[in-house]
Image (cartoon, rainbow, N blue to C red; front, top):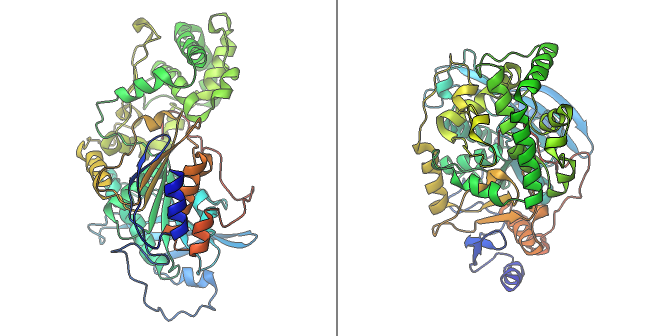
Length: 494
């Protein structure tokens, strides 16, 4: 691996090919080297001159784009940061049938730098932030809110227009509009559902981006086959930690009656209702059954010390506090579900959702098990699952991945079902960060993989050969700007 890496960096990807195998400890996928400073073969040609001079203020250039409007500009040293609305068709197949305003942000550095296109798959943050690939390439960053997450929701909402192709088409239109300004190379990225989103975008519009960096992206190819998750939970971490977590989860169900009384008081105090899920009892069990998953998604093995060591001897308050801290008792109330209706709709129509077993808990204590996404979406919204959607994306990635990097965390449950590469993949990789959770990143990879991943991101961004050879982030870490912590989503969501 070290020999191959030295060879790759010495030539600065100007010639030759590299083939490796990506596993949790080694890189993987057949590779083909790009030409630095250019888009991938078959990518979009350089944009034609628009008649706008380089001296024009960047805000004026952005607002000159048809359909673009300013919500707010926020200052940050060394950048211009804009919160914008962009007019999108509700249905990209029939653009004349209505529009909606989609919120995007632009972290502007320089039109001569590469641009990173980020989506988290949910709401977009309106606080300046820089994702890891943006720091690596020292570039601009465009961030997009996923359609149907408020306020980027059509009114009235035709939920049949919420699918992965329509969302990818949103990105495509934003890219086409901004490429006229940011003409250098583009890399798409995202974490979790955002990593899925970046992958789907690549599947439907493979000529747009010069590279893709997808973090902790689940890949539920066959929705009814989830044994990979059961195998994951049987071996993750240490037996001592697993036993602690399983005991607290079981104890919360054994003590269902007194803890549900506490839940009733908690709900009344906060005005929570449970119409969508079908009652407080269903909500209580859903929160408890998320407990072990939630721990491994957001915590590290070292955090096991915070879990009660003897669940049977713990007080009701100790059990409640542990479950609430990790799972969140507000998650399945109507008020907790409402924000995430678009996610659960997609999980129940295209993305799929995991189902796991609980061998450490006697059957009499489990009434509902993992509930389907249908239970978390108001019944007024029709849903029908499309089993071909994820199979199509999975097949495409295996045979067509080009300039794609997938990063997973060793202890993240969502990585149990992941994207894998086939013989048709080129210059693409799947890496696993040892000991990390849902916040896994390139910085957390083992040294050889970190160097290789950084070099490939730089090469895809079209920076100088000397920068690629050094394989280090081009921008210094900024604690106020760079996002490093895992973004916590309550309940069982990627």
